Length: 492
RNA sequence: GGCGCCGUAGCCAAGCGGUCUAAGGCAGCGGUUUGCAAAACCGCCAUUCGCCGGUUCGAAUCCGGCCGGCGCCUCCA
Image (cartoon, rainbow, N blue to C red; front, side, top):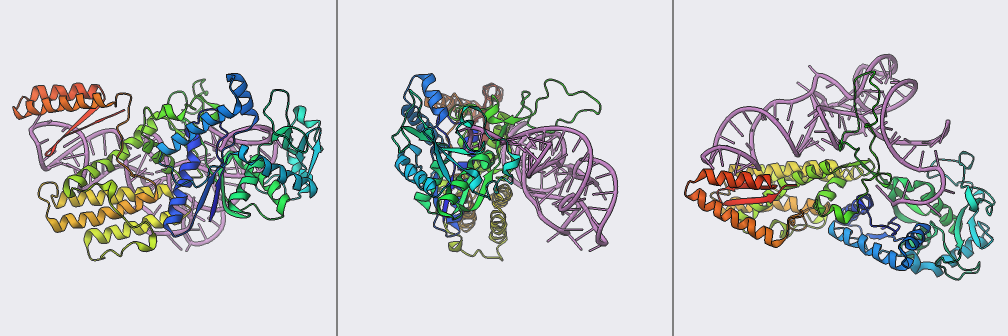
């Protein structure tokens, strides 16, 4: 099974919006693999483009260097998020000869024409043009500006652009130039996955013109469909000035809309588009993954710091259990080995109250995933599983006096959580403390203070102990006293 | 103007014709527990799904209108 996702144009550091598609498709690949499919996942890198040229001129560095830097930024961010299921990251500039051959064939077949060193796709030759985005040539304005004069029809789009002085270029039968925006996806997807392949994905904003034009090129080239299924993810939007997440903005009837009430806007058009690596200084990558998959993939996601904090809070419920689990069993939850395939998952005894319940919850999780990748519903089930596990720990007093046979049942039950959270790419390793003050010295100093406080508590000097806890709390460090000792963590 | 999406509790969010007097989470409120907190556990927190009509034995779910929000319409994931 072949999947192709449109990746970034690497001219600026990527923001959180660029992470939505990769996380969703990472989950898709994980789930499909879990179901037993052999999946090849491709995400392309567009490393030649007008915006790259403009940015490289502005910064006074070669386009290739800019692209390399931004590609590395992109890879680092994907890695932080645990997106490690991608098989190929083809780069447009590595496919120039393929593209030239591809364009030549389109000209030969009468779908493209050369004009003053540019090559354009002739959309009038393809009656079905516009079928993906449900629009017709009559409805469209087409592109104005300087390119318009060279085109037969205003809706024709560039396959090859003649180089202007000072622009990076490659030799071609039509003179030195560079590829147009859409051609790399047609060429690289065909090269790596064949045509048609199974799923083509991208942001909702790419349906037109990008994907429409890919279809035109690919169908013009071979007469075959490009992809069997199209999957477009909702866009991430930034919350408004007030930081309010709610998009409804109810106000008393008759009251005028005030200046401040600006609606949430698309990230690329707002100041919410902070470089992703800066965001990671304040929030854990797992919170970002959680945010992305807590909404159905086709819906827009509202981004705000408040929302990410909420995700951190949700995750902490799981982390606390994992700590308890390790205390009880002596094993790390993160390293539990669990079935990696749906059909390898063992039958759990229906008559066991705990394990029978887990079996039903597991079933519900899978039903959600089968239903158009309802990750939000599936995560809801994960919380119900967590609740069952916590309840069992409480009822059996496993932290105080763990009976071996009950511990064994807990491990079996937790293995179900391990199996299912793997499918979502969650909890794959122990979370690192995040926050600007999370360096090692700080952590050791906090450990020291906590030890001193423990001594005070032993001496029943509760006034001092409480004062330390309060003051640390003011610094964003939260303490929890457990029978087994004190746990602390940063709270952003 | 054209094409399309959305409106569920204070907030986020699932639900897509009956099992919905609507999952799950955040926040909040009681209780168990705790030196006190926190966490965990027990319980509470939308008879109602933007508004108005219609279809149906039955609607948050389908249709129409209205109100409100958002995206795309040539280079944004």
